[in-house]
Length: 400
Image (tube, rainbow, N blue to C red; front, side):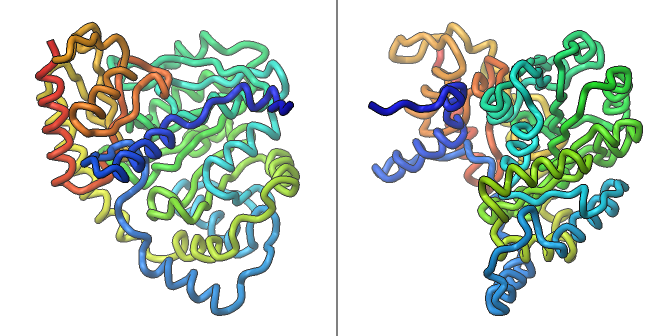
């Protein structure tokens, strides 16, 4: 008889990855599915990054490296933090990991004890509460609805902090909503956190460079220097540099925490891929002008999708300030009936209806902790987005 661990029983498979797998299965059956579920840029990794990886292979950089990143990559990360965020981190304050998810996992598992609480604004990235639960902590969810621009208020934050609170986890721009906190909004949240010295802040800035707001991107340690010693600033190469498969995440933060994360990594994955690290040095240190060009394309797609979804019966789609997702509210569609007479009672059923009747794959809002809604990734071509949104419009118009 086999028995899995209690820790594994506290988590669920990733809903986003599950939908991507379903899309692959349906396409293999010859079904014309448009997949808007994957959080992956459709742009290719820049050539100068690829060239750096090829050079590293030819030079034999294929051996083990330091557990949490080469000296060269840590220097590049430190330079990036200074250049983009005006944050000073030494190499001892920097960790490099196999993707941003790995960074978050290491930080939470290395610092959470049973009963510790982690405040997570919803809608949230699907992995946040599961990693907290795996580590033995308790996720404390704050709902920031569409009427709040999918962001939480200082009053909401203050109301849920307890003596057991260990972390507050912020993600701006957000996956799944694209919502982004301005510098002033971060300062207001920071003012609350400054009054609670036992609370640490983890900020997931993975979508930092996919930004459309008129005001510049800001991260909390940058605008709230009093929180610097209590903040882990997480980022990575996956989204901005179209390097999802290269698996490089990194963070800057307190040396005691970085040391603990290194210890954990030494007994789990060891170092990130040596070739990927060489590529990441090039990505962070090389020309950055292509980021603006890609943002222009992403913003055009955002405007297209927001307009078409807001022209769809029963949907309300706020306009996000970053990332490449929209998160339309589907409250008006709950209780409606499909042409087959089936009642749409929740957003998971709505997504199932889209998949079956419109051949469009998205991810239901319950997976992100805020319903009824769904996430659409617009990291694909204009033509595909027009076709997908047209199919969704027809499917929603057919509901009674």
